[in-house]
Image (cartoon, rainbow over all chains, first blue to last red; front, side, top):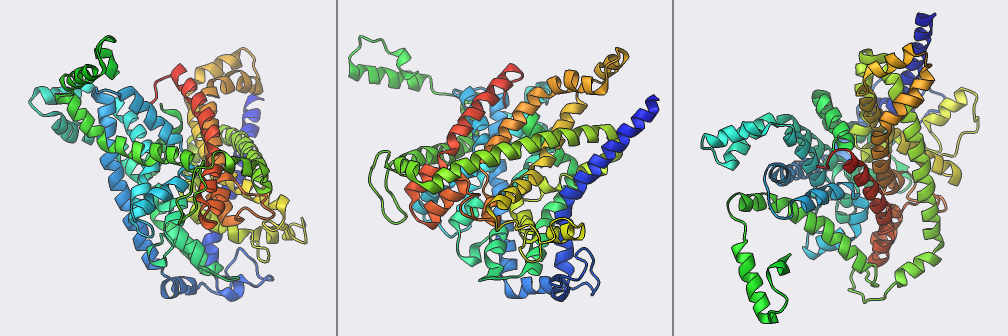
Length: 281
Length: 317
C-alpha cells in the first residue's frame, strides 16, 4: 500500500517536472529550429513548425555576418563585459575583504549600503545616469557602459564575496601575518586562493549580467558602431515592417552561446551564486 | 560625530580648530587607513553612481528640465501633471497587476516545482541544471524568441493551439490589450520560475528529514507535513525571495520594451518603460525622472522588510 502510494507520488512529480521543463525549454528549441530553417519553410503555414524537412540552412547566419554589424556588436559586448568584470573585481574583492576582516569608521553603514544598493534596480537609475554620462561627454561610447554597469554588478559581487570570506577561518591569514606577510600579501597569496569559488562566481555573474544588460545600453548608445549585442539585434534586424526572424534567431543563438558555454562549464557556481544571492545573508 | 570632541561653550572659531585637530589626531593610521583605501573604489561607485543619481533624480523631478535645456525649479508640477495623466494612471494600474499576478504565479508554481524536484531527487540533476536556462540566458536575448513566438501571423504557439483544436482563429497575443498582458506576465513567469524553484529547492533540502519521518510515524499525511513542517520552515526564504522579486518585477523593462513597448493602448506600460518613453525618447527628462521615482517606495518598503527578516536571523553581508 505504502510503496504503491509512493509510486503515484513519484510519477506525479515526474509529470510536473516534465511539463515545467517543456515550458521552460521550448523557446530555446524554437530559437535553434528557426535559425536553421530556410525562409521558404519558415513562412509556410502548411509545413510542420517543429521539423526541418527542406534541409538545414546557414543563410540566416550569413545574413547576420554579411549585412549587419553583428561582429561589431559582438566585439563591443565582449569589450564592455570583460572591462566591467575587471572593474567589478577591483572594487568588490578589496571592498568585501575590508568589510569582513578589517575595521574602519563607517563599516556598518557601508555594509548596509552595499546590501541596499543590491536591491536598487537599474530602471530606477537610468534617467539620472543619462545626465551623469552626458556631463562627462560619454554618450555614444562604450565607456558610458563600462562606467555604469558596475552599479548592478558591484553591490551583488561585494555581498556575495563577503559571504564567502566570512566562511574562511581567520587563522589562515593570521598565521601568514605572524610569519611576516603584510595584510595585502596575506590577502593575495593566502585568502584569495581559498576564496577562488567566490571569485569565480563573481566573474561569471559580472560577465553574464553585463552581457545581457539592456536598459543602459539602449539609453546611452545610439550609434550602430557602438551598440552591444542585445540592442543591435533588437534595433537593427527589424527594418520598417520587415522582420528577419531567421536572422534574429540566429543572432539570439550566437549571443546566447558564450553564456551557455560558461554555464555548461561552471554550472555549480551559477547555482551557488543564485541560492546565495537569495538566501545567504 | 565631529562635534563630540568640542565643548558647547567654546566660541565657533575655536570649535572648528579643535575639531580639525581632533580629526587630525583621530585620523586613521595603519590597518584602518589600509582598510579605507581598500573600500575606496566600492564607496566611490556607491556614492557616485548609485546615491548621487538617486538624489539627482529627486531634484530633477522638481524641475522642468528637458534634454538640451537646463530647466528651472517648478516644485511638484511634474507630479501634479502625472496625477492628471491618464497614461500614467494606467501605468500604475498595470504595474500593480503585473507585479501581483506574476509574483504570485512564480511563488506558487515555484513551490510546486521545487517539491516535485525534491521528490525525484538526484535523478533529476540534469533537468535541474537545464531548467535554469531561462534565468541564466539574458532576458534581452530570449525575449526576442518570445517576440517571434507571439508573431501575429506565424506564432508557433497559435499553430500548436490550432493543431490541438483550441482557438482555431489564433490568440492575438500582442495585439489585444488583455492578451498582451497575459503574454508579458507569461514571459515574466517563464524567466523567474527557475529562480524561485531553485531557491525553494535549496530551502527544502535543508529541512532535516527526521522531521518528516517523525511526523509520518505520528500518522501525519503528506499534506499535513507540507503545511505544518515545510511551509513554516521555508517561510524566511520564501519571504526574502518574494520581496526581492517584487522589486525586480515592478522595475521590469526588457520584456515590455521588446514585446509591446507599453502597448496596446498603454495597457502593458510599467514605470521603467514609460519613464524611458517620456524621459529619453520624448526628451522630457525631468518627468521621466519623476516617473521612475515611483519604483522607489516599493524598493524602500521591500528593503525594510528584508532587513527585518535578515536581522532576526543572521547578519547581512
